[in-house]
Image 1 (cartoon, helix red, strand yellow):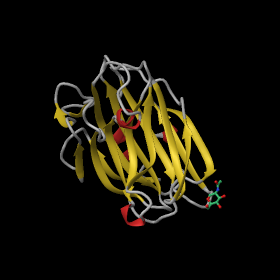
Image 2 (tube, protein in one colour):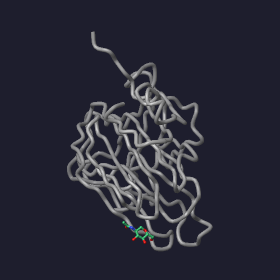
Image 3 (cartoon, helix red, strand yellow):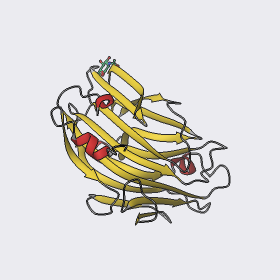
Image 4 (cartoon, protein in one colour):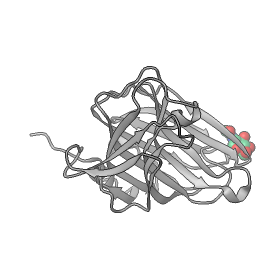
Length: 251
Ligand SMILES: *[C@@H]1O[C@H](CO)[C@@H](O)[C@H](O)[C@H]1NC(C)=O
């Protein structure tokens, strides 16, 4: 008999090296905020899930007469500040008919903080995780809020539609060149970068958000392809603090 270990349980098993500060098993309860822009929705559903009885279903709907952004996200506040080391994980599933060509960007998770007071930006995402076609991308953002720099890590994995996939991130959030950023896809480490800057030179707390943010529709000035309704399910979302270099290869 195969032993089923859930992502959250596997993360909890890391007690000697890490502490889980947040976990959500696909429920609307427990978040600091929900962001549903325009016709987008965030729903708790019982018909699709990774681990029952529920998952979160994020939907966004394209509207050619709308010029705003397309977020359908849940928000957890205060998951990192500069100097922290953390882990972040979630399961996600694209609708079976998810159209990957022509390729356009769809963000699926992000770290973000409000920098309106600086006069240089408003809500500014540092790292994001997104899809371009069927390819998984992530990035780090560093420098100052008024002179932001981005390093993008493209083509990390091929994502299949209609199946559950697992994302795990471990990051040492630094601005002195000693940070690291690692990402696992379905348990395989697909990115590992050491001795880099991993966040903006600022000490405010960042949020962790998961959900569908159809950023390509806004940033490209319109939708590519013909699929104006997009759906992604989420389950087993977790975040925690790492006290030593805990490698999820052993989770
Ligand atoms: C990290 O940022 C610091 C401060 O801006 C800079 O001096 C340093 O060169 C950067 N290191 C790397 C590896 O980019």
